[in-house]
Length: 198
Image 1 (cartoon, rainbow, N blue to C red):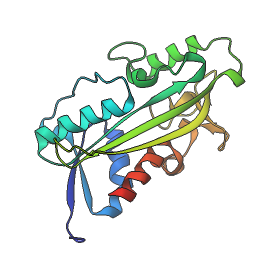
Image 2: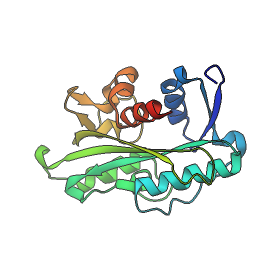
Image 3: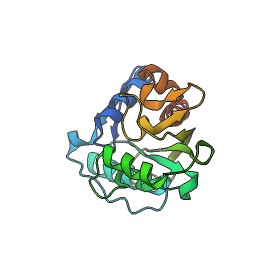
Image 4: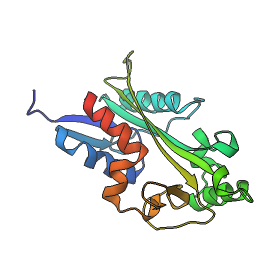
């Protein structure tokens, strides 16, 4: 069994995520395949938590592809905004919003707040389903503490990375080299937990 490569479908159309997963799972004899390869469309994220949405996405991809599936649901939680944008991080400025539009809305909603009131964290929940009807999905959670800058910084990463200041590194997530980000981010934490279980 150890020499046999396993195929797992990633329930996401995000190329950045696919590359991150392929890199993080490269030594596990796992081929991460994009859901687009199986004509899996996006499923409506009707859950009220990251966990529920990740399960919905993984179940949908497993059902259509016939393969085990991994899905993630992630976002940023800002304390001064009662946890917003949370599960709505990707569409904070409206359906189909760009990263720039979401970032602009977040900055506007935090206007006038000083640094100590701008605490935030990224969350990533990963779900692994062996098949569409798997009653015991593996669920792994990672978080990454920081605070929201008053202006964008850096041009690596995506989403809220340019606004997310990482105290341990003294810069924004978008200023970090990819290998550093991939070793300390919320997704890296959740992935290493999942890799351990797989």
